[in-house]
Image (tube, rainbow, N blue to C red):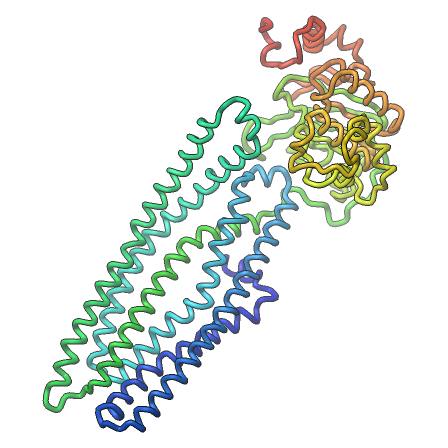
Amino acid sequence: MLKKLAAYVQQYKRAAILTPVCMIGEVFMEMLIPYIMAALIDKGIKQSDLGTAAMYGGLMLLCAMASLMFGIGGGRFGARASAGFAANVRRGLYENIQRFSFANIDKFSTAGLITRLTTDVTNVQNAFQMILRIAVRAPLTLVTALIMCFVTNQRLSLVFLAAVFFLSICLSLIVMAATKRFSAVFERYDDLNASVQENVTAIRVVKAFVREEHEKSKFNAAADKLYTLFLRAEHVVILNSPVMMFTVYACILLLSWLGANAIAMPGGDLTTGQLTSLFSYVMSVLGSLMMLSMIFVMLTMSSASAKRIVEVLDEEPGIKAPDDPLTEVRNGSIDFDNVTFAYKQGSGEATLKDIDLHIASGETVGIIGGTGSGKSSLVNLISRLYDVTDGSVRVGGEDVRRYDLTVLRDSVSVVLQKNVLFSGTVLDNLRWGKKDATLEECQAACRAACADEFIDRMPDGYETRIEQGGSNVSGGQKQRLCIARALLKSPKVLILDDSTSAVDTATEARIRKAFRESIPGTTKLIIAQRISSVQDADHILVLDDGRINGYGTHEELLKTNRIYQEIYETQTRGGGDFDKPEMIGGDQV
């Protein structure tokens, strides 16, 4: 884990190396000051020698200034190294996430990935800076101060050794108890982020249904759980301070008692200056132990974050291009050969079962079926958003797993069920389909998608600003812009996953007519709930519980397929869109 993260220091290695070098210089200068102070007291002040006192005072001032400069340097280099390290880790996480398949994203969840990119990286950044500075300074101060104590007086230095031993045991117990509790804390951050993300994304729905209080209670429940877990972890960590203060005061009392006796006894081996320097060293020793305890607490908190980050960095994309990929899709023919698919490989019930299907290049195929029948799962396999569990899917006569992913997805254009627009102009969003598309090409695609009629009415036309998520356009307008964006790719296969559900039937008819005229050679797969959306297709596929229940023309299915007949009868009687759980296998609801 450490080796994996250390690789992200990269161009900030120099700053990362100079930080501990500066810390070493700072500690060395600080440790000299008490030693010089003892000489100032014993050889200058006690002897009433102002010249000697001034000389040692000047040395102390020089050491203090040098220590200050080393400290400033260490702070600047440490900040640069840790901030750069965090930026590289975030970049690495984001780049790996971009390579994830849908299955990888399903594994971590959106909220979990956001937590790793924000809170977890910040924790690791703070820990890294502390390792570069405090983790060098604290043990070096501890060792150097102990050496100086033994140089000053060996017998009294045993007090320090006893304190170090006692504190080491206490801190180890505290760290072990806190580690487990902090691990649970950071898992709860995912729940909190999920609550916030869901609420902000769907704020219009929340307000429309007056569910603000419900959302508040959800957030408060997640926040209270996080508070409780943090409190349990902090209850362990706060023991660090009283244990430390008890040790400090015990050391001072013992040092005062034993030191005073050593000075007062005839022939004592301790001077007033040496006792003064020992007091300075005791604070340095115990202060360094306090710093070490802080390091342990920070590392305890960040270790859980580091594990979560490395999980994402180590995650191999579930879908990769082969070593020698095909770089051309010959045509838009599609074949499903005995396909079975489950979202959780090796576990759970299959979503699609025994799918055998051939679609000729240039055909228009409608796909209809109840909720959960596997319509979206079926088309997601064509562009390799997911991989089949068994069998194979072929596009242009070749298994989709043999293609370069960019080539395949440029040839298979998908308008997903959830339409997403990005902040920017209308033109910016359209050029997601083709980044170098001219204005004329964008206008032609919008005419085919019937989007030109509302774009022309916008104040700035194609330069009109789209807010994040397309919040300033209607659902039907958003769908038509997404269709136009897909058409700009000039695909061999166009998949519309229930992408005209928010469009009125007249506009939908114009879109279908424009498809026949503008992209006649493109294979078109149209998932819909309305029979009117697919009845003119060359063939219609009826799915039921992940299996093919029927395949044929509108007229053929009306004669032979019970499910299709029920859908048609319901909709022609004005019953609305078909929802399988209410229609199949029993009386109509």
